[in-house]
Length: 323
Image 1 (spheres, rainbow, N blue to C red):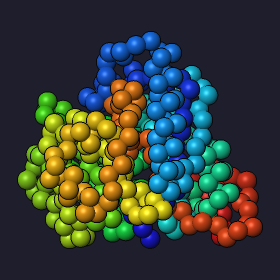
Image 2: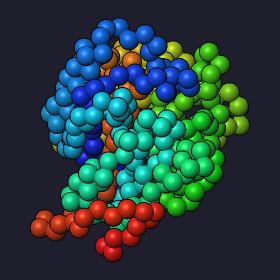
Image 3: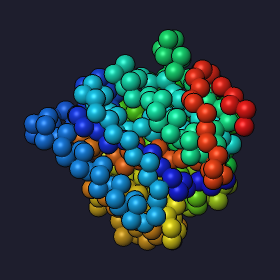
Image 4: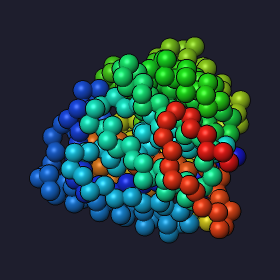
């Protein structure tokens, strides 16, 4: 079991735009697009293409899917609707905004099953009927090796959903309250926290309760992580929205150029002891209130042996595929 995926899923949008239905609780989202919708969409398309090329240049295997629809403004952020796990399980999550629910795609799950071993599919989307939400690895920052789920309370991380998912998938939830420098709860955990193999970037100052802050800090230290604390200002620059990936020559921490620019020399040196920094330019996509981590869904599934092919995709809660 490893923390840094060597395979990732990305979605390239053809009609990207900041989502008006997510602006209410996403303080990172731009309220004023700087140019025409057509130019924004084209720029986002080009940014995803460039990130894919950059990841592939260091040996990360990118499974790229295009979104040709014009009613899914946030489809570029697939990590919110599914996660994958080393025991072969795939989890599909309940989404807070109705216009994001169409991002869940059977063809992506089917494609993963063709390349990787999938033992079960846990479909939690039915929780939307009860207004219970848990937006994947946006709402949860998962330490896959130490089986810990770090979760900031928000509309997008319901306690009942947290309990069910963590129990089913075998993670210990560490739940805490956050506030940004404006006093607003942070909408997704992965904009203030990133956990790698032996490194964690965390906005500890965004956790006002001292007991909860200590719980997060002690859990990370006990699991062998060096903590790089982030300031409120750095969180606003998406410094927490980073992901560690496995390349052909070692670990890389992928983050936006904006996030990279906000880090101090000492922070960059600390990170570089654990992974090579890999900044990429995604200024248009960041208008939607997410950055590089949100764009990349890690694949933690075991690979299939050569010559073995998957059956057609199954649906339903925890559908066991008999492998």
